[in-house]
Length: 80
Image (cartoon, rainbow, N blue to C red; front, side):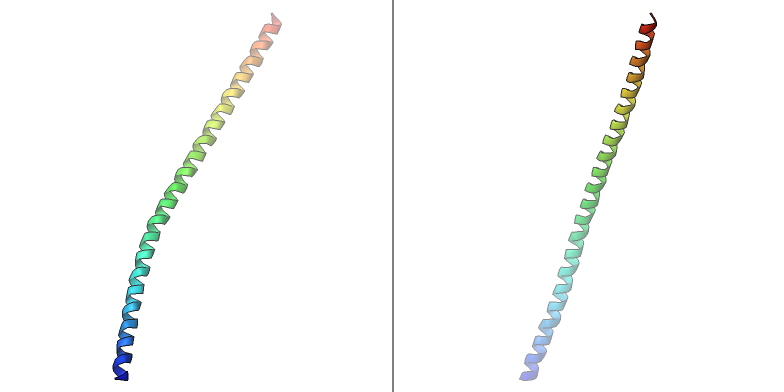
């Protein structure tokens, strides 16, 4: 009788190991999706930051050109 009980326990333990393995696989698959979503979100954030940086550079260039134009105009007006 004792052998049968031990055999039954071993079978249950083996089944539990298989079930745990299945659960682990499910968890890994779920986490892959989360990682992909996280990576996509980070890429979008980087793209937004790059766009802002480019817009900022464009504004700086426009301001510099306008400043030079104003200075040139003021110099021209002072000659008159």
